[in-house]
Image 1: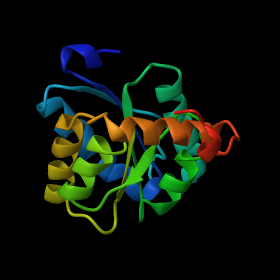
Image 2: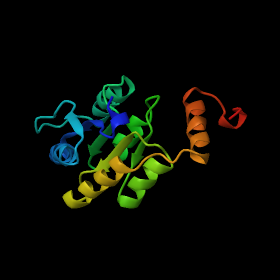
Image 3: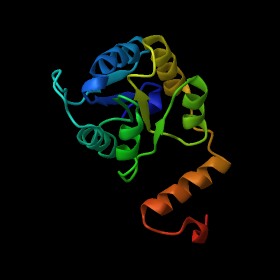
Image 4: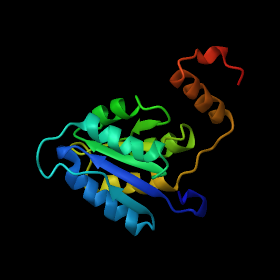
Length: 161
């Protein structure tokens, strides 16, 4: 991973409704000085978002990518599917503010976007804010650790954090 030097490696995945947006996002990332790659394509044929969320999520959990972007019609399905994978914190984002907060407060490592509800310019702005915003840590770190407790099947209120 190259996150330590300020650049990021971003895995991108989409279902058929997000394939055009995925290509645009790849170009935006490159223009911002980051590396990106699209994981599989639907070749303009219907494909199921849970499979893409799994494939892209594996790129993050295996360390091949620092973060990921997932796109489907609404972003909801991708968010639900990605959040089932241990180690992923997927945030469905609709604007620059939620992009910033998903990183600064929640250390989101997966950005979920709606191909149908967001325009190209807004997506570019969201990507730029999300990629540049660091995690604040502090009181938010404790909450991230409690999310990890939930992933492990433990009651976060009992954690000694």
